[in-house]
Length: 178
Image (cartoon, rainbow, N blue to C red; front, side, top):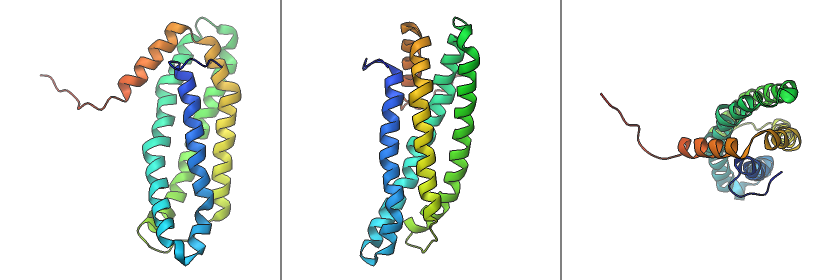
């Protein structure tokens, strides 16, 4: 994969590192809950994890689906020999996004209780499984999809993708015109 700092493919890859690092905290949450001295730490960790999924993970999935996957689909017109593979990867990744988001909703119910200082049953196996599932998802994307995207997206395609992502994340109020 390219090491160009202005390459949006590199940015997507970098996001996975940060996401996976946060999910290490998720796996540690049951330990925090088992020790009375760390109840406040557990409360804070639960708040941060809940906020992180909403503010980082879900938008990352949206960026991939709305911008990256669309860019790859458009580029397939010039690379029909890779169309079946790319479309299969995209379908798999979208399906995994929905599964991870659905699974997260169950975990987040407990996190919200904990973040309010309430007692909640934490399914340690579910937390571990979620973290492992996300790792598998990210590894598949890193090993297969992102290298394919890097290969088929031209320099112009990457610049267009980068600009689309930049505009998507601008913090400006919506403009209404009559």
